[in-house]
Amino acid sequence: MQIGFEFYPQARKRALALSYDDGVVQDKRLIELFNEYGLKGTFHLNSGLMGQGERLAAREIRKVYEGHEVSAHTATHPRLDKMPLSLIAREILDDRRALEDIVEYPVRGMSYPYGHCTAKIAEMLPGLGIEYARTVVSTRHFRPSEDFARWHPTVHHNQDLMQVARAFFEQPPPSQSLLYVWGHSYEFDRQNTWSQIEQFCAFAAGRTDVWYASTREIVDYLNALASLKFSVNRDVVYNPTGLTLWIGVDFKPVIVEPGATVRLTPLPA
Image 1 (cartoon, helix red, strand yellow):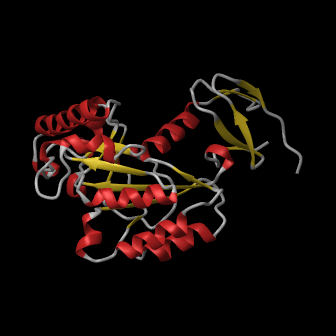
Image 2 (cartoon, rainbow, N blue to C red):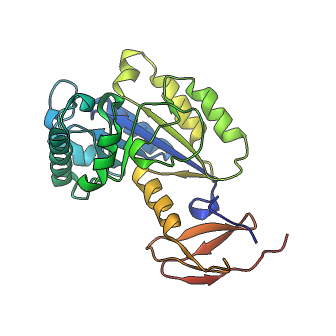
């Protein structure tokens, strides 16, 4: 009997996550597109810069990002690799605190300003309440990250996004597959590429085999899968989490409800 973690919720094998930085006014238009097409984004904000230049004011944040995830990006967007760890911790905690006061839920993730990260910075994140941190290194592959503290996305939206998207949606995934897109919404104004991101949204939308999720939701689900408790013989599994989970038994989906203990048996071919 083969046991595997090849499924997302509702036994889907594909997930799409969209991650955008800086909290700028162009996010409003981008979110209108996401809402129109049923997509979900994670938006990384600098609380200490709100209301400056193109950045949204604090009073706008809760309404603009409703239905999407607000995440940290440090308070003032410094180069973290050029700062002492004590000041980095202050930047992250100040940002979390200010954002949480606005959105009224725990802010649990971040993206690195300029993508700069070191091993020491990544190691300190759990102590600051940060469960994931996105870089700017595009992998162009579709495997979910094995290191949430240095989570490399699939592709920037300027890097042949439609070509990458076609490869993602048109080939059957053998296991959990993730298309993780990142960028800045002001780039669509500066490069006159709003039509291109709308083309992507239309192409990606409405697929019953895709989980449209925030980064936080993906982290929660993958962590929950990793928390499952199996017997030595792999014929019994206990789900200690509050999420409904789907696991593979002989490559077919089996549901494990929250708090449930399930006896597993080989499934017919």
